[in-house]
Length: 433
Image (cartoon, rainbow, N blue to C red; front, side, top):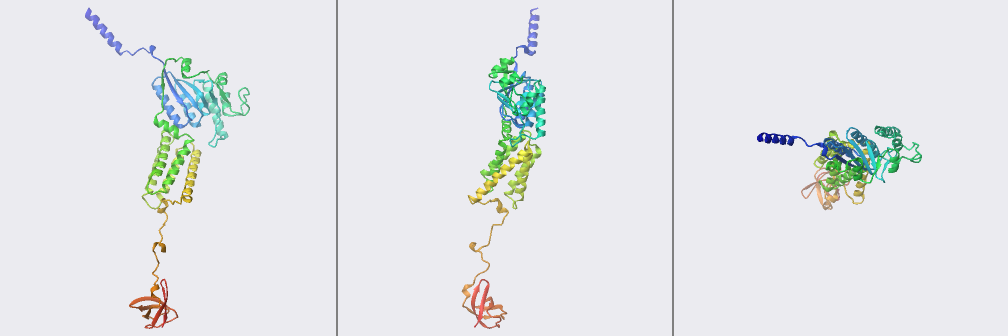
């Protein structure tokens, strides 16, 4: 009997060892995803990975820790769709600002909480010049803002007032202004679920005090993608690339300036590739351009370098999320390159090594020791005998040397004694004695 009891206990112990622990005592799993920069395609790629990571970890809630001035509309729309596609509860914590595209993203989450000094709104769609976009783009954006508000049961008229100024809300804004909500007004109109001080208070308010909190950091590649796809960084990066390559044209071989230019281009394309903006065809065109430019340093003619430059410019424009903006950025970079060329020529007196392959600079001049003929001044005053008739040109013999000459008159017979009176290059003049 005793052995039976021992066997039963051991069996129970073995069974319990393989039974998973009860979820009743587990802490809630909270994922915090920061949005603290401009909204770009690089940010969208990071959020895609972070949300998928939260799904795989069976997170109870995702909190977007937001402080953004806004950014690209297409990236914001993709991020909004990412948030809508998850079944996990989503919360936006606005700890400073959620402007423009940031407010659009916040409207897709289930709940919004703000600090006392936070703001959200001012969401008009603008072009690269800072002016309000065209009527079609504005209409699309207003509809998107209203749709995002309706999805989560918020007043769409408030969202519309954030996007355009002609919505009349006298209690919230002046006529013609865009709506920007502070924490108090956001709570009043139902766009905020509460005003809190910090993340700890938010967790307590949500009922997740003591929860296992995971913050999803950006990888190096994602951070780089977010940086180089920033609309401010793009023209700077392209300007560095153009200046580096232009300065390289004034130096023999391939040096620091060229390396700097190529590095800037590689960073641009790598970041846009990670962000999903530059596809394989764009990358292949860029690599082909680099190969052609490098080949130009070893090949004569200049054709390879010209084709390489065209390929690189085309791939840059193709890689951007906005063709017009990328074209403007390229024009800025080329303008700075032109200024650098003028400075190098006018101020420093430099000449491009590159164009030595295209233009023949060698010359056979007198200063370099080249002459078309020998000037025989030593012959003046010497006498000789005509070997042929001079009609008026012919040949004379002077000290056993045959010399082509021209008669001073019209005719001198052969075997006549003559004297050399002039030597002008190849023209030697004789006179009959």
